[in-house]
Image 1 (spheres, protein in one colour):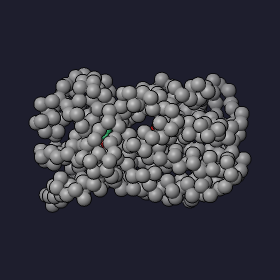
Image 2: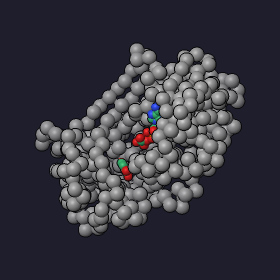
Image 3: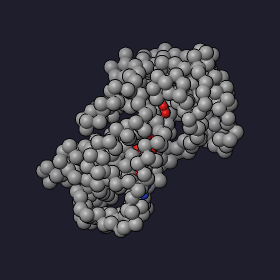
Image 4: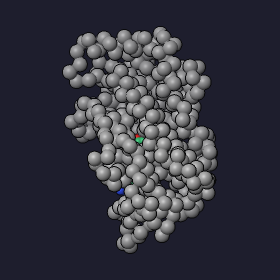
Length: 388
Ligand code: APR
Ligand code: PHB
């Protein structure tokens, strides 16, 4: 088999890249190791920046998003029980759109399915000769070995993918921060407790009230890393949320059985550069951010935007300039989101071992955010997404 761009991984980065290339007349094959059912049931984050929505519009994948997504003009922050609002739209002119990554993946899959893409359940994907101008990919599908020749490979296979292993270790510089806690997430088919998201810094730890629709809520509580999900029956999660989010949210909270409940660690990670020869990394394959601020999916989208632009330029004019500049261009935006999600994580969580000084500084910063339009604007600008 032959294609122009072999895309490893059918998450948001790979699917969006495939569709951006497709509308420019560039052929690609997306190799996804999981089944369609698995990918479309996987629960992920759910806040889209306007730039991400614009990209989905551009590729014709935003019809359901516009019908079902919720436009949010602000977010609530709570500091030791005192709540205040960041007026995202008033401060930046932009809203965010609440729409699940799961739904977005379904929408993109439906479009790609028209040309029998992605190739699901592609096993043992391996990258070859990426530093030459004749790279290729091998994999197994339905028990048969396949070789896919291509001009370029896009590594969009997430944090646990294989693409990044094709870059020699001595050429990669990695940067990492591990956070000493996780998020326990709970999804339930109950109306949200508040019309806007609530991020709370409480003496018992961080909590977040989010949603997927007016009938489906998504909640998180900060928990120690070694916590077991078995120790968190639904009622305990609801009780903890009610305490941490404060009396107003608690009064508006409808409890219900969890559809899903899991604990995820928090991590910041960047691998540089995002290119080796004819292999280009995009999305979680190159960088991870903690979920505070919901930047992961939006970074996958901006990478897909930059990489598609560079590839389109190459196929139209033969220029390598965009390809040569891709890593630096993508990383400049990535690092700003890494900084923002690290800052927001630090501001909103209780770190084990923190003393009263650390707590006072957090509360002073939250108070400053609540009173200073300059500080609130800096926060809002990053939350709604920096320009591409
Ligand atoms: N071969 C083929 N596909 C693979 C392989 C492999 N060896 N390893 C992983 N994959 C697939 C995964 O099954 C997944 O569908 O690659 C896809 C990567 O998708 P994501 O993890 O969603 O990553 P990305 O597209 O970069 O999107 C980033 O997703 O993880 C969230 O929070 C993250 O919101 C962020 C977004
Ligand atoms: C979510 O709805 O899953 C979500 C929302 C906002 C975040 C993180 C996760 O900052």
